[in-house]
Image 1: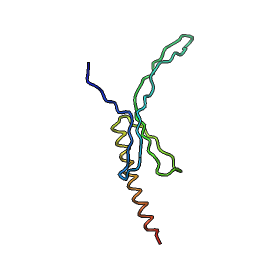
Image 2 (image 1 turned 180 degrees about the vertical axis):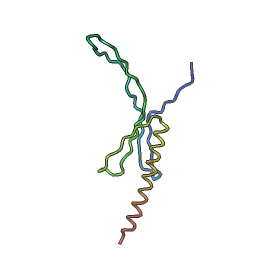
Image 3 (image 1 turned 45 degrees about the vertical axis):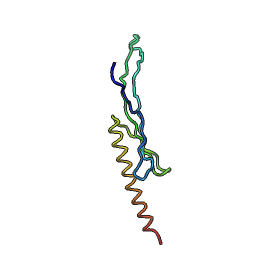
Image 4 (image 1 turned 180 degrees about the horizontal axis):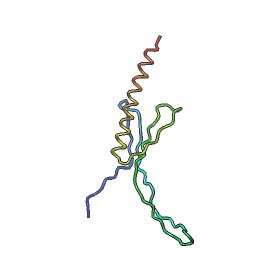
Length: 104
């Protein structure tokens, strides 16, 4: 009997300003078997299974679609989501500066 295992399957990443920037979801890919007929003879094919993480980078504007990226590990998914959250903060600062500059 082994130790208990914790498996992280989902996360939300917020920007420094508290805006939901990205979501992370574990996705199982492939697996299972399939019977195909080759030259009249049934053959069973086993499909390899793997796990990936889908990182949905949430758009700051409803007119721009979200982006869906794939990462091989949870750590890589978090790195991608955090980098995006930082960029959102950076751009929000630029937009605020532009708005101040446009004041008459």
